[in-house]
Image (cartoon, rainbow, N blue to C red):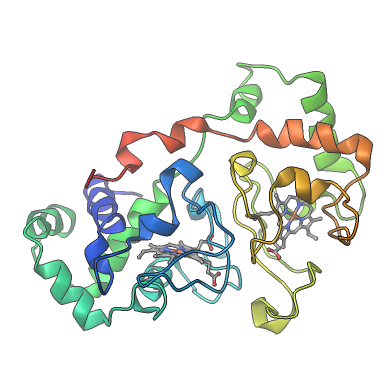
Length: 282
Ligand code: HEC
Ligand code: HEC
């Protein structure tokens, strides 16, 4: 259950630059609403302009990730545990938990928000993490063309139908859907070693495995995969001279347009303008 007051507090914290050492970045700097809570750069800039080591992840439908583990390498067991990591990360926001608590306590708008969310004005990092997680759990896409078709309110074009068939059935045994499971298009448990060759980053348990977040809104996102090395969907699906095909992801030329058409039906444009997810400091 997501309590409204918790998510409201979480929204303010999410966009509050006071959560970084020099008040330069907030969570929303690297997870921008206009980009489906992702960044539009391969690597993101932290509080002093230093770069993250991996690509930012879209915070969409995170509540549906079965194991609850967060990050490309799943090193955070829960959303709550995840939330305190960028705050303490020396490149991203660079605060100790004690500094975090005193900076949040120093803002006049927080006591009433904590009172409403938790029934008392006491502020600590555990509550900050809980509120951030509540806000993130509230960001769910359900108004895409795909959703409308599944509810019988719209119909796929011929290309979209073919694309869905390819997604569900093509290239067995590793169909797209066997890893990115509908309806949220999440990898439930990234079991198969995945070979987007990256000597610099061995992923989960150093086994060349990575999580993939929800593929919803993927058509609007750029710099895909854990290192942001794949420009966009078209580039992923299409073989290019001088670049090895991505196993399971680069498909036969006649399939590209159909898969693109289908994947674009997963876009819910309301999410990028929805006021309750927007920056309250603007
Ligand atoms: C400087 C940029 C930056 C800032 C600031 C930042 N993030 Fe991130 N975020 C990232 C990157 C990069 C990753 C992927 C890192 C990895 O996997 O090692 C990520 C991953 C995540 C994930 C994992 C999503 C998933 O599906 O596994 C969540 C959740 C998240 N961030 C929430 C937050 C919250 C909450 C804040 C603020 C407290 C925040 N981020 C601040 C860049 C940033
Ligand atoms: C064997 C499992 C598997 C199969 C099959 C598979 N994927 Fe993936 N996919 C992954 C994993 C794991 C990642 C993340 C890998 C990384 O970042 O290095 C990923 C990443 C992606 C991404 C980038 C996501 C992001 O947030 O950057 C897209 C898009 C994608 N897959 C679409 C597809 C499509 C379309 C197909 C079928 C043509 C497909 N996948 C087949 C496991 C799979």
